Length: 598
Image (spheres, rainbow, N blue to C red):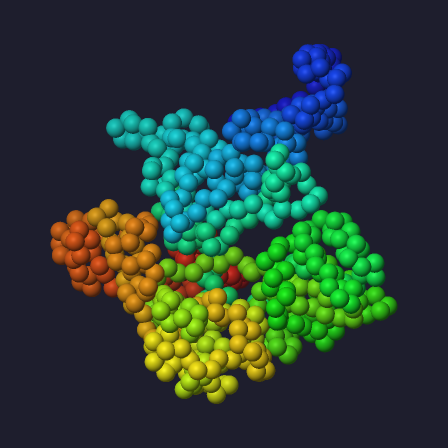
C-alpha cells in the first residue's frame, strides 16, 4: 500500500515541541551547572546539545540521534576515555553523515571506527595463528545491528519451520566463521594534530582502523547462504598484466618530497598542515619527505621503482601540471581514464605497488590501489617456497606450498656457489614462471633449492643482487624477508573432519598451521553425495582418492574447471551469470536479441 505524508507540518505544534525540548535542555544545563566552567567529561555533551538545538538541519540530527541508539558505545566500557572529546564526537558524526544514506555505508564506517573496535573488542583480534579470534563483534553485528536472532517474512512476521518453531538467522559456526573475517584490525598511525589519550599516550581513536595482513585470517569464510565471502570478485590471477596502467586504475599519494628553503622547521610545519601527513623526515640539501605511515617511509628509504614525470605516460599523469621550475603539482588521488602505454622499466613488470615519480626538484611516491580480488585456497601444481634467510642460516629454513600462478614469492637464482636475488624493484613478488624466466634471461642458473647451493645444509659462498640489470650489494631486493620460489613440487591435501569441516595439509611444509591434524579448520560447501553424507567419512572407508586417518579422511585435491554454458544462447542475463559463476567474476559482455548485456 502506498504511503504519504504532509511536508507542511503544524508550526504551533513544532514550536511547542521545541519549547519543551529547550525546557528539558535547561534542566540538563542546570544539572551540569553550565554557568560554571564546563568539566572535560561534559564538554562533548555541551557541544552535542548546542548543535542539536541550533542546527538548521534538525531532521538530520534527530535521525542521527536515533541511529546512535542502535549502534551504541559507552564511556563506561572504555578505560580512560570519559575525558576524551574528539573520539566521541567523531563517532557521532558517522550518523550525521549517513542519516539519509544507506545501511551498507553506515555499517562500514561503524565497523572501522576505533571507538566501536575498542567497545566490542574487535580492535586487536587476530587469526588462529596467534590466538582464538574475538567473537564479540561478529555476534553483535548480526544480533543487534542487522538481521536479529530469527528469520522474518517480508511483512515482518516471524518465519517458522514446518513444525512451527522459530528459525534462527545464524548458529555458532557462523559466529566463528565471521569472527575470522574481523581479524587484523589495528589503529591508524598516531598523529600530532588530534586528541591524545587521557594518559598522554599517542593513540589514534579518531581515524578509521586499518587491516594488518600479518594478523588477518587467510582461510575461507562462509556466509549465511552457503556462499563464501569474496564470491563475485575476480581471481587475482585473472587480473590483466600491468593493470596499474589500465583504465580505471587508482593511484594515491603516499609520500611527497619537496625542497624546503626554511629547513626542518618548514618541513615540520608543512607536515602539520597536510591532513594525511603523519611523519616527516629532513635531510641534507634541504629536502623534506612527508608520508602517511612509517612503513611507507621505511620503504621510501630503499631502492624503489622510479619513473620519470616527463618521459613516462604514467609519470606525467601522476605529476600533473608543472611549475615554471619544472616541479610537479601532485594530486592526492589519480584515476586513469584511458589505458596508458608502458615505458622503460614499466614494461618489464607485471605488477607494482609503489612508484617514485621525479621531476625537477619535486618527487613523490604513489601507491597503486589494487582492485579487490581473491585467491583460491586449493590449487594445482603447487611449488615449494622458502624464506631466503635460510641462505644465511639453513637451519631456519621454513617451506610452504604456493600457487605457481600467483605472485607469491621472490626470485633467487643459484649457479654453483653463487646465489643471486633478482628484482625490478624492492620486495618484488612474481609468479613461478616469471622467476624461472628471470634466472634464464640473466644467465643465473636455476632457482635455488631449500637452504641454498651446493648442498641443502650449506650456505652459498657468494651472494649478490641484480636490480633491473645492475649488479648491486646483496639484499637490495629485500628477499631475505620474503619467500622465494624453488623448483620443488609441493603436495596439497585436505583433511576432512567428522562434521564436514576441513583443514589444509601441505605435506612438505614446515608450517605448523598447515600440517596434518592442525586445529585450523574451516567450513566448505559440499556438493554431490556419498552413501550417507555429502563428504568423505570413515564409515565408508573415505572413498576414492582418500585414506582413513583416525576419525578423519585425508584426501588428495585437484581443482577442476567445467563448462557451465554450452553456448552463448544459454546466457540470458548478468544475474544468471553471477548466480552460476560466483567464483572468479569477470567483466562479461555479450549480445542477446541485438542488445548488449553486461
